[in-house]
View 1 (cartoon, rainbow, N blue to C red):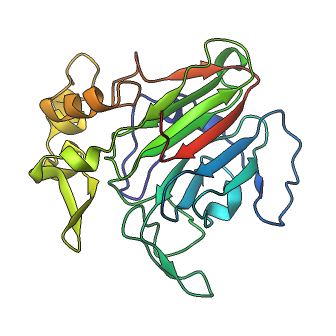
View 2 (cartoon, rainbow, N blue to C red; view 1 turned 180 degrees about the vertical axis):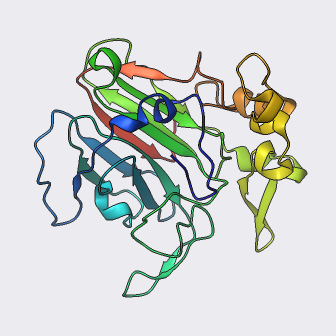
Length: 257
C-alpha cells in the first residue's frame, strides 16, 4: 500500500492488516450510507480553518468519495463495511473549482477534491483496520510521512483497551529548519527525516530494514516527545498501535486534548 509519496509504511495497522480492507460509502451531506456496519467514523473539525479530509481504502472504493470539505465546527459521519482498512488525513489551504479540480497546500492528492490516491507528504495520517486479528480494530496516528496538522482518534464504546491516539501539539512551531515545508513565508508542515534526507537509517530500508537495525533518530525522537502515542518512525509499534473491539470512532482535526 502507498501514499502520495509512493512509500509503503511498515509497522502500523495499515501494514499489518491492510489486505483485509474493503470499500464503503459515506453519509456526507445528503449522501446516505449503503452499508450496514457496527462501526462508524465521525470526522469533526475543531480547527479555526476549513479542512478537506482525504481518505484511501486498501481495497475497494474510498469512504466519503475519497474527499470532501469540512468547515470549522462541522462534522461528517462515514459508514465503513466490516473489515475495512484504510487511512484518513486532513488537507489544508485547498482551492477547488466547481468540477472538483484544484490544489491543496498540504496533503494534496493529485489536484482533486475526491482523492483516488494518498496525500502527498508531509501529512499526518489516521490509519485503521477493522475486525482484524482476534476481531479487534487496529488504529494509529502516524507521523512517519511527516506532520501537517494535529489529529486524534477516540474510541466511543467498545471493549478492550481502546486507547486514545493523538498528536495534539503543533509540530510546525518547533520543526527543525531542515525539515520545514514553507508556504508564503510560514511553516505549513514538518517533513519526516526520510523525506528530507532519503537515507536508509531514516527510511528503515536496506541494511536498516528491520526493527533490530532501524532505531529512533534525533528527528523521530522530536516527533515522539511531542506526540507520545503517534508513530514517529516505521517500527514504533509498541507505543503506537491501539486496539478496540466493537467501537465507533471520533476523528478530530485540531483536538484540544
